[in-house]
Structures are given as structure tokens and as C-alpha cells.
Picture (cartoon, helix red, strand yellow):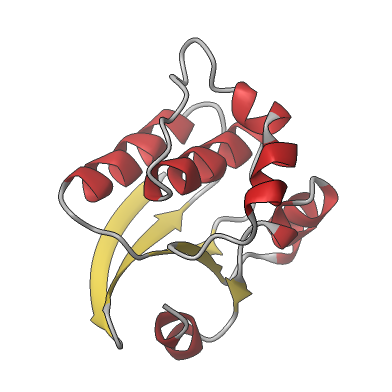
Length: 137
């Protein structure tokens, strides 16, 4: 997994977290750590670019949900001991509504299918146009 970070200026500064490679159990903790690092450094609006992610396992879903929790100001589950609670907590996430500070860009069809299947497409705003995504914050 290759993780890069860029910033674009829209109405507000938007940080773009670009992921390249499969998002799975071998690297989901790295993605969570990068999301936490960004949040701790003061980033408040995050666009996760999934255009380079051909596959996401359930561990990838845990990473996305955990980052959303962080950016909502909620305590994130410890991925070592309770990370899978994120999957079971999707019902609570839906009750909280669509994420306003974490959005997704360009999920590939296979990843979009997984997100749809587990109900996360209703949890995140999803964009195919980077400019529209940045302007939505």
C-alpha cells in the first residue's frame, strides 16, 4: 500500500489521502495511523481517494470507518483489540448521518460494490470528480 497526502484549496483547505494498492489486513492499521496523524495535526476535512485501490477487505472497511470516527471527534476503536467493532457499529454510524468531514473519491467498481453491500455508500458522500468533491466541504 502506497499512501500519499496532498492538499487542495477549495472554500476550505481539503486534505487528499491517496491510497494505492489493495486495502486489507496487511495495511489497514497504516491507513488508520495516517488518518490519525492527519487529524492530530489539525486536518479537519479529508477526501480519501480510492481510485488506486482495486480491492478492499473487511479490514479496509474498518480503516475507513475508524477514520470517519476520528474526524467526527469520536474515540476510535483500538484496531488491535476492538477494530472490528467498527463493522458492527455501522448501524450507529448510519444514525449519525452522512459524514461531513470525510468523503470518498473514485472507488473502483469492486470496492464500490463492497461499500454498497455493507451500507457504507449511505454513510459517506462519494464523488468521481475531484473538484466537485473538494467544493463539497
